[in-house]
Amino acid sequence: MTDTALARVRRLSRTFEIVAIAGMLFIVAGAVLAFLIPDWTRNLLLARLGQTGITLPLTPATTLAAASVIAVPLGVMLYGLWAVRGLFREFARGDVFSAAACRKLEVFGLTVLAQAPLGPLTAMALALVTSLANPPGQRLLVLTLSINDYFALIVGGVLVAVARVMREAARLADENASFV
Image (cartoon, rainbow, N blue to C red; front, top):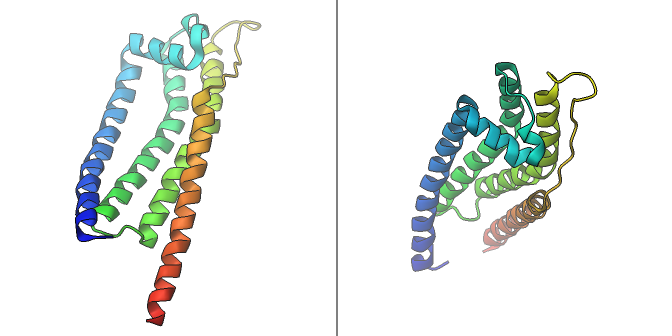
């Protein structure tokens, strides 16, 4: 990589490291507010469950249960963003093909990949925990599938594969460098 290209990668990486950190802060703040403001909680349920979310009761217990369910994919997402922040930090240092950079890219890919099953499972768990207060026969168990879940599966798989290819390329480059 030329010095000019590496300088561009470093600048871009420093910018996106900041974007990743800001994103993590906004996600946490948004999630907290989503469960403190009842209208936002209802909007979150509507987004995840569609029209089914309109009729579900929002008591303090169901809101806490819903927050607990949402905490799982949110935690996975934050872990992935933390890894990608570290990836950009590696790139900003000029360590583009280091083992650490490859590992961080793989972790990010795995967290994106994990979002694919977490999407439908989260919707299912949300419907279940928010309808538990309903009388028997009126409790809900829903299965939602989205093109976003499929997209997370494909993008996550691509990222994991690229990370593994990068790791092998870095290993081969180190091996070849030792011969010279």
